[in-house]
Image 1 (cartoon, helix red, strand yellow):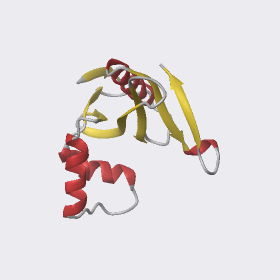
Image 2 (cartoon, helix red, strand yellow; image 1 turned 135 degrees about the horizontal axis):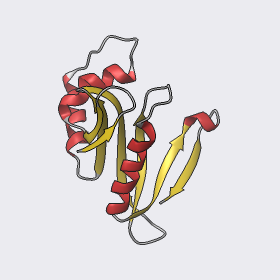
Image 3 (tube, one colour; image 1 turned 120 degrees about the horizontal axis):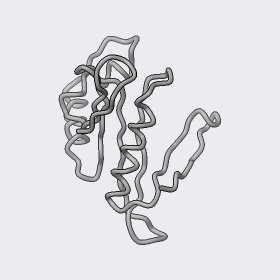
Image 4 (spheres, one colour; image 1 turned 90 degrees about the vertical axis):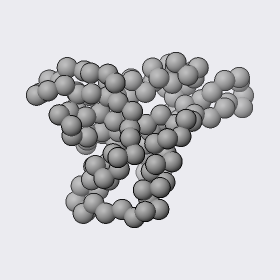
Length: 136
């Protein structure tokens, strides 16, 4: 777990996601809808949270989930080694002091796993999205 001083109250902590984070994560993903999930969704979530080929991180302050990242790792075809893909990045829509820190934390973790690139899909770039590669 990594603690970062927050500009607001308390510390922002970055930690590995747990299977028990599902209800709070769903509340973040769909803030206007009631939080409900079925057993199949819970099983899927447990598999994701426990998969060694994935890194799932959450940022929290005072026990409240603020954001999340899911990074998956695949073998590269063109070169030896691994490639990291930022599969899910959920950060609050307003600018926040911890968002870039959470992304940088994921980049450092990918670097430690031997990745030279973190591939990111950016929806806001175009209507269909844009593939961007961030060299580490």
